[in-house]
Image (cartoon, rainbow, N blue to C red; front, side):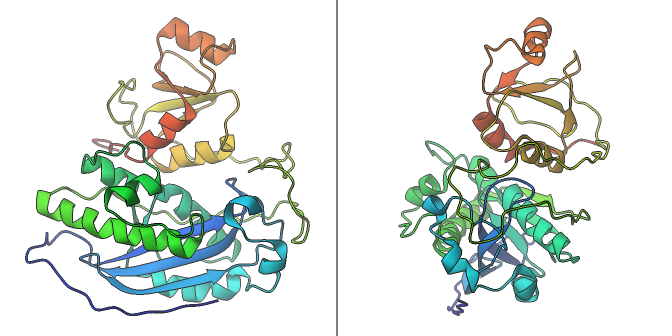
Length: 331
């Protein structure tokens, strides 16, 4: 299941010295979106500092559990049964990432899934920085109708052949990232690089073994009542105040969630914490933003948000805001 290819590289005449010297464009397909979900396939396109492809690699991964939404990624239990376990490909995966900036579309998700797999293997991924192509497209002010990968690809004339296939998604992203990177270099745009912190948690909740097919959508096949108890680290940044519509979120902002979400609540909270936001379990006058898909509901948080004039956005808008969080002025 492994592939490797080397291509010749070309380079523009000028390049910012502060830009990274290498990138690893990554895509992973997973059994779902929650903290206990697993990677079932992974692809990496290694690029040089100017975005030219050096080689690529792809592998299936046996998640040792239900493969999740087969109708999306197309990987059945039968296909994955003979695939290597993550710990079997962890070293090779690491060599593809080492010394490079991890590039992904909605990079915080791919990074957290990868970091958790390495944590389960009692190891760390050799990644210190990541770059989200959603954040880069915003920095470049690209005229995109939305922030889907297919929209970014269409903007640069990249043809997608197999959506939700890790190798093709990584190829498409690599081909769209190269002109994005060049546009950033020519315009002197500062790349939206974020620190990647390794995870130290390690647990394996009860889950159906591979071979038991899911019947629902993302998240519908796992016990909804199970949730590990853990205390989130204190946010190291001061609260800069309320979110203002049309502007960026800023590290330190207090964010509260209310109601049902399509992505598991805890994963959304993890993403917010990883981005440097303060996740609050309650809503007060100090809350910067409330995230809810039902702003007309009568929940206590929604009611208080109306009383205090707290800004409200839905889950989709929050996901886009997470892609470009403004760094705090001081810790």
